[in-house]
Image (cartoon, rainbow, N blue to C red; front, side, top):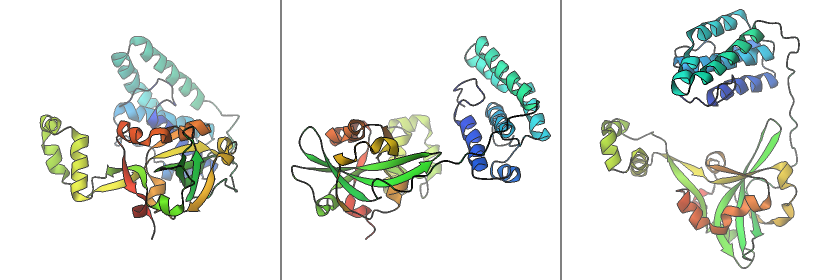
Length: 307
């Protein structure tokens, strides 16, 4: 349970619910399709606190797009009368927070029991059809140390009108422009993420809190078990930047080749954001230290290839 804020759309559960509905709506989904894809009601899936957040976010979204129905309205009344969020905010924060939440609920109730005269129109987001670089491009660039450093474009994603380029962090530093072969024999920053599949989770959980702490904590135990059983997924560390920002400094990069990386390298991993060349490349100044600070690891680039 996370009391991120008292507003109707405030926190992970509310945002996920609201935007799942809006994304379906913008893609042309009918009310019936939305109700199938984002089921309602779901009282057995959440505790009372999160169910209030889910239900109120659901109702607000459906009202805004003109798909509100009487059963949704009545479910909102049930959760408001139960008062789970007001109770939690009052107990865990203060009476003022509880009252503010109640005001938000009252405003929502007045809204969803009134006619919506300005139904939200379906949005069509502009798609970029000509990318600045191609996926799998190896790009070299120079920093203040006068050395060439190397990145690779892992993926390009487009969502709600934003086009994001995701670059991998390669451990390759040279006084001359590196070759594709040199990059292939370098390392790329990432980590092995325990997946749980194949692990003996029963024995791990049976250790109890004290024993887990003696062995370094749950993260250490899971990492060790993942290594032992190969029960992990590969996550590549990425630096992301928007098309509108990257277009201003594409001349800072020199394409030196292309490597066909496995699909897993393009989908999972940690992502840091950037808006300038300096921000995009800041971690390359000392990648060894970056790996230590963020507890990352490295993979051989050649092991990540579709060859």
